[in-house]
Amino acid sequence: MEILRTKWVAMAASIWIQCTSGASYTFGIYSAVLKSTQSYDQSTLDTVSVFKDIGANAGVFSGLLYTYVTSNRRRGRGNGGNGGPWMVLAIGAIQCFAGYFLMWASVTGMIRKPPVPLMCLFMFLAAQSQTFFNTANVVSAVENFADYGGTAVGIMKGFLGLSGAILIQLYETLCGGDPASFILLLAVTPTLLSLLAMPLVRIYETSTADDKKHLNGLSAVSLVIAAYLMIVIILKNTFGLSSVANVVTLVCLILLLALPILIATRAHRDRMEKTVLPDKSPLISSPKAAETSVSQSSEDDSQIEAGLSENLNLLQAMKSLSFWLLFLAMICGMGSGLSTINNIRQIGESLRYSSVEINSLVSLWSIWNFLGRFGAGYASDAMLHKKGWPRPLLMAATLGTMTIGHLIIASGFQGNLYVGSVIVGVCYGSQWSLMPTITSELFGVRHMGTIFNTISIASPIGSYIFSVRLIGYIYDKTASGEGNKCFGSHCFRLSFVIMASVAFFGFLVAIVLLFRTKTLYRQILVKRRLHRR
Image 1 (cartoon, rainbow, N blue to C red):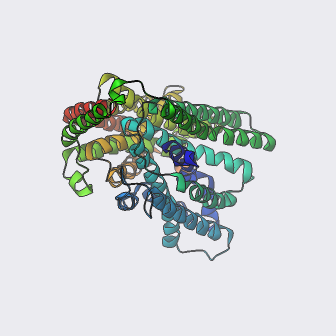
Image 2 (image 1 turned 135 degrees about the horizontal axis):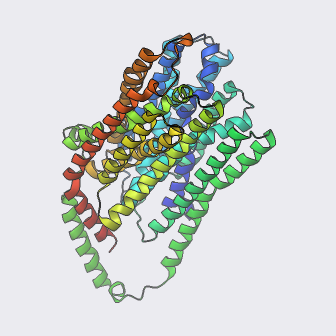
Image 3 (image 1 turned 180 degrees about the vertical axis):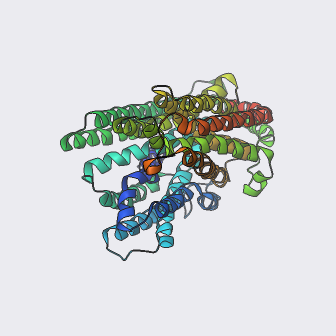
């Protein structure tokens, strides 16, 4: 069918894959059963968790693979043959199934208890599948919607942020509270879904004036799904839901997740209607005029293209100051944000929040994370196209706002964790959509997967520095009494004041990047206006 060979169906397929690809976010569901069945102490479990974080963020290989398999399938070169994003998705599916299935087999006793290094390998394989899914979906979306890359990346990263909440809905409905069964679910569901959808994920050349309209439709769908999940999470944590109610909420969620294919169908129908309508324009009516127009546009475009990024590879990009400015800003933003969610339960306990309040904070983090990922992508496109403001300006603004969020958490006033977690969660999520889009504009699309996955390593580096060397160290020094616990706002105050300073430093770094890229973004605007002529 012709409709299956459109970039809109490719977008819908990528969204579905993203909806289940964030399995690494659900480690807290099955970590206890992993610890008990394998006879791990907390230190050993934390070691396994570190390999989860490394696997989920060290996506350099997935980027290199994407560049290789799509090198001869880029715009104007077709989508057939043996290359394409589907190969990256296939390898991700294999890794996902192998890693989680072997973990499940270990937990259930199907195989003998593996030594700790081997379990770390299982976890690494399972978590790294996320980078393969993410690279294929994000980079192909940027290529298919080059003029609105921020919105496309925001949608992809947003659904990845929601995937943890979606998978937990599956767990609560299908697994009956059995974490071991959930590990098997993680092995099967993302693998099966990606294998079914991957033939539809392709790179297309087409660009139409209706792209923004239909991307707005997908944006509205993502917001509806996020709002629905937020309501379900609040109801479950506050009142609890019966098994029948869980089934009903899951069915409603699946119906909502089917909406992107309706957007794709409408986009295809609009395109077909415009194709059959005769164009009355005298410029188009005249073949010679059309040829001249296209020729002139091509000449102008080539002149502008010369001033833009040159599709730098990773080594070339790493010789650029802009690469290291972006990397440093992400250590400050992603690192301090991830450290906040990693410690939010302990912060809540120290401030004597109830277990229901803490569970709500943890569950709702995925919603704030989504709003940041989606909102920053959408807003950065609007700011760029309507105001001509470079994307690093929004990066600087979110890092500056994150500073305020950390200070609110440090303050310890009543309800501070609610306000602070919303601000930090939104600002943290923003970095995950801004960074890949800025990377594509600074260094080109060809090696985008490799470069942005390399910069993503800033997240676990920052998390280790701020979680272990800062928050953990200060907490241990402050804690006393039974269980070596600490209660009161002083337990985390100094840590979050320091992280506020770090976020502010990231703000200053982003300002430097903003001034370095102002000319580049002026050229990008001119180029895109020529495309739309």
